Amino acid sequence: MIAARSLGMTKLQSIRHVILPQAVRVALPGWSNEYPNILTDSSICYAIGGVMELMTRTSQAVSNTSVTMPLYLVCAGIFILLNFAGMRALHMIEKKIEIPGFGTGAA
Image 1: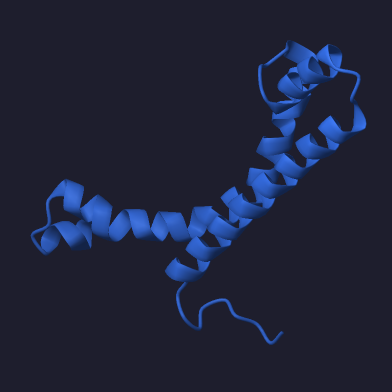
Image 2: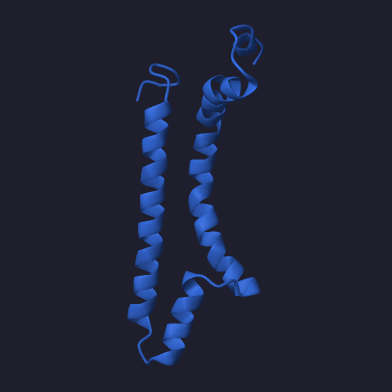
C-alpha cells in the first residue's frame, strides 16, 4: 500500500490494482476447498432448521407424488452439477490469476 501510494495512486486505486489481486491469489484456493462444503451443508441446515432449498423442494414433491427415487436422483444430479460447475469456474479463475512459474512442482 505504501509503495502504491508513493506512486501517486489513490487509496481506492491502490486497493484495486495492488492489494486485491494479491489477496485473491492467496484466498481463492481456500474458497475452492470450501465451495462444495457450503453447498452440501445447506442440506444439513434443511435437516436441522428447515431452510427452504433444493432438498426441501424435493421432499415436498415426494410427499405430493408416489414417485420417490427418480426425484431424489434428479436432486442428486443437480447437486453434482452445481458442484462441478462451481469447481470448474473456481479452477478457471485460479488458472487465470496464477503467477507463472510460482508454486509449480514437478508433477
